[in-house]
Image 1: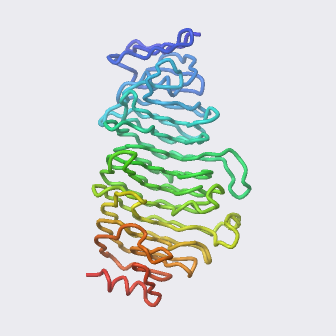
Image 2 (image 1 turned 135 degrees about the vertical axis):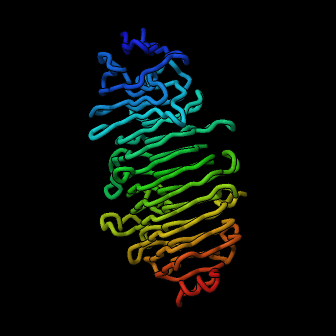
Image 3 (image 1 turned 30 degrees about the horizontal axis):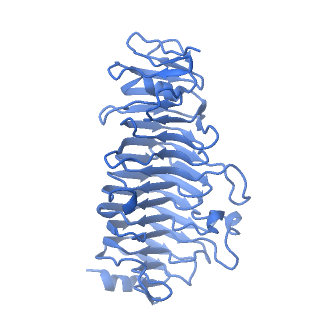
Length: 428
């Protein structure tokens, strides 16, 4: 079957006898492309059939092009793989920092998985970047909603943005039923990355096994903003830079104005899937800003049964530590957040910070649900009194922090006036 896009200015991709031929790298490319779930139209030409409309449209797009998607379900696709004969792949370089390619969805536009695997997969076998996705509902595959493949030492996934996009898993944790998914977003060596609710809050929910955002060895600025996440198998954000997986992280990672409910509830982890926000050994050149977020657990009655026998529901809200790696963290700024667990919930300190070159605590509310554990722990110790990783090098305070629950410092508990004790120890 022959599938082609008609345009007077376009050197098009062609499907012929099951093989795809990509446009020439010197092709001018289309500037305005429209898609339905089964067709593509470039620069006003008549629509032509497409096996994978988004991948086909990306093949045709010039830097700065806009790809508009009409309502409907679109198949999973990849970008940057070197297999030019795969209709689901766009073997392209993408846009530029000044002229990104924009893939624009809207109400009723879904990207759905093709069975197992990932829904949107991005690779650097062909160096690609600067693509912005807008207003897409992404149904995660069995592995990920969006995955940035593990890259070589000189490769970076640069300039990918997701605005007003959702990842809507279909697993029901309370009933232990429905299609499973491992990650919302899994990313290795990304830079200049955004996942942001612009006109509304982005949603990520019902992830069965692991993280909403699994960020490894980030190599530039990353921004996660205005996201509402709930019912997650493990964390909302896990930020790591393990020595054996790549270089130390660089740039600034910002987690801002997000609302997280009920993370760490995977049955495979006995419902103890870690802190909702986990910073675990980024390296000294990475700054992490955690600003204006609300992290809660235990307020959904249907989920309170998800725990081990005799254990309280829930884990913790926020942690920074070295992750058991040689790398510690750089600067960590925790500002104007509300960490709130329902009464009786939580099996560890609500928030815990260690291994930071510089830690700033500024105007946060720490409201522990379980009085057996501290609301805030600095340089925590294990049951035998041993440090849980490296100590913080520096702790500074901004505006008053509110603590409902005890303060723990190097294993010592301060239950009377914990906020005052914090200010006495670390205030100027």
